[in-house]
Length: 231
Image 1 (tube, one colour):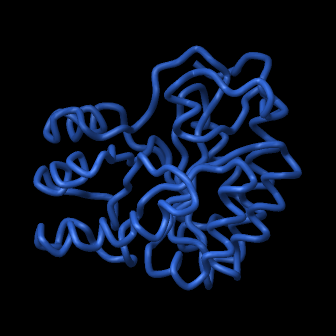
Image 2: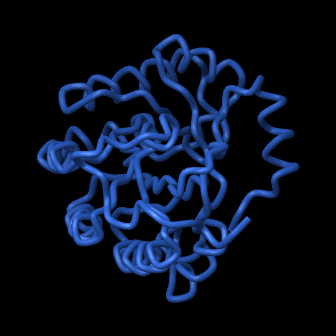
């Protein structure tokens, strides 16, 4: 499912332009983001799929799960993917009092920082308040939502999800999927989606790479040439 541009613009306006939904670029790249890990049930398979396609992603990790599975956080970072802060546990950010939010955001940051830089934050349940954004900004984090979100299969996707997401995975798009227990389909969804976008000459990169517009040539993923057939 994609967010209508008018709605995205309205939300961005209300929150002072501090929320990233997509990136205006002519480079044939899009960002794959995966929420709610790390999880032994799904993260290893996802990393294997990404390696097979020569693609990279940004993993928005829960602090609680990161402390349980530091070896998976380390593998994510070691294989060239990016770490993002998804707060401590899977709960609606908008409902958290600001002091509690600050504490959980910082605790997650501490859990992730040992493995690599963290510059992005994604709120739980997809909605922050302006006060939450202020806290995240003070911690050096920018909020990212997305331009397309997989909602079928508890956010992991079903057999038809890759075809639907591929329609909106174009230059500058930010695609959101979810992993974790009960979401075994996510690796297959990513596998099929990457195959579809690569056939259109589109490369899946991290958020930071998408924003920079330039990938490190020594780590350039396959499929990073060609033109997107979409608008």
